[in-house]
Length: 212
Ligand code: 2DT
Image (tube, rainbow, N blue to C red):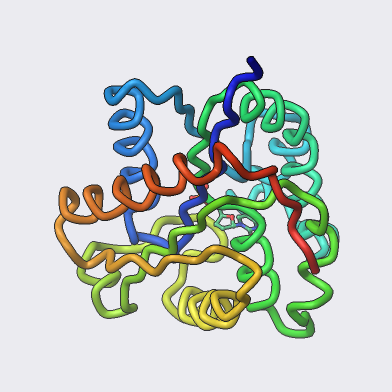
């Protein structure tokens, strides 16, 4: 009998919302409950393309805005064969940022529209669930200073948040808003419940593709 596929679960949100912590906790909880799960993140900085992106984010290099957008997308495409293989083998993938960050961050720059930004990611594996960790700019500020990387300013993060809000209106994507102002454990419980439901449902559904 063919094995049931894993689910593609994405966590998105602005900086300081706790995405990485929650991804790690979710993978651990799923594994503990006997469900094969692995974490991935985008950008995946270890590949050749990922290294170009990493240097850009660390302000060690400058790249033209369209170019870097396409590199972020290429970084996802280069991992698609691996993602599909794992999902087919029954492993659930918990992904820290995906195409939605790509669109939200680039379209927050002047001169970019959502439509153009979405095009390069059309056809990527579609997540079975995208959880958006919601945190107001005021609450984010209480969690400490932003880091040193490009994009880590409160003005830019506010613009990104607005773009995410626009993206969340897309009914073709299974969005769930998660209140990230709760305690780490409460957020974790909430996320785990949604994920387990999604993993059950995804077993019987084909993997979709992102549309424009
Ligand atoms: P972290 O490694 O701290 O998550 O920061 N970004 C991410 C984009 O601009 N486009 C993308 O496609 C993706 C996935 C968000 C990575 C930074 O890169 C931004 C923050």
